[in-house]
Amino acid sequence: MKLTVIGAGNMGGALIKGWAKSGKVGNITIADKNEALLAQFKQDFPALQTTTDNIEAVKDADVVVLVVKPWLMKLVLAEVKHVLNLEKQIIVSDAANFTTSMLEEELGAAGQYFYVIPNIAAEFGTSMSFIAKGATASDASLKVVEDLYAIDGDTLVVGENLVGPGMMMASCGIAYVMRYIRAQMEGGCEMGFYPQQAKQIALQTMQGAVSLLKATGWHPEEAIDKVTTPGGVTIKGLNELDHAGFNSAVIRSLKAGLK
View 1 (cartoon, rainbow, N blue to C red):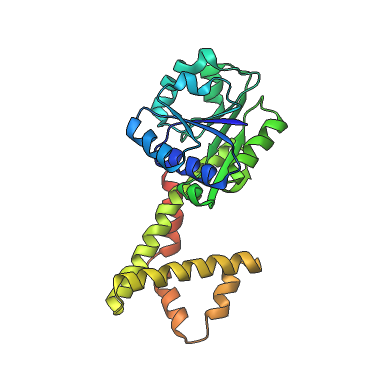
View 2 (cartoon, helix red, strand yellow):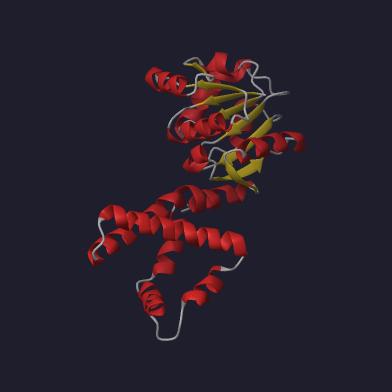
């Protein structure tokens, strides 16, 4: 399979690095206008093909993944439209809110179009990617896209109306989790730990919580009950989170980007 990725910034770069590190995608071409960035990718992953020419990049590609800013999508699509083979090529928009219907408007109604939102953990094979299939896309094409993004982490096939909420939970959500970790570190420092010690504690605690839920299948409240004793210190801390509106703040943060 020949994979072309247009856009090698933070998100595109994370996807590319995840695919390249895996060794499961044999033919990857990157297109970007930043020559220094391309040179760095070529140095780190010599097997990658790099170019500043979007038109050359998409020729003969089996899958074209567009990871550019949403306001650049129409310009890029107009540039490459005349060389795309919509009967054979799979076209994936990884641009926020640039849906399969928008791909149809720019390229034509019939095509193998997908709207996918991953996150920057793709570089380490731990992304959470939401995949929406266009109206005319085949199940065979869906399998190709699922398998591709599964290399970089977990995938979930959803209706296009759920890609936005998924983005808030898993893409924007990474930033919200980082903010919690930072707060836990600051609390640790106030209680006497050095910053790096506090970071180690926070990260291991987060990893432990995730591993526990994955291994047991428990609802989070089941796990909470295991460490919450009557009159104990855990319930006092949980009640402080509730008094501060922690749950409400998290829910509001997830919904904020959908307004």
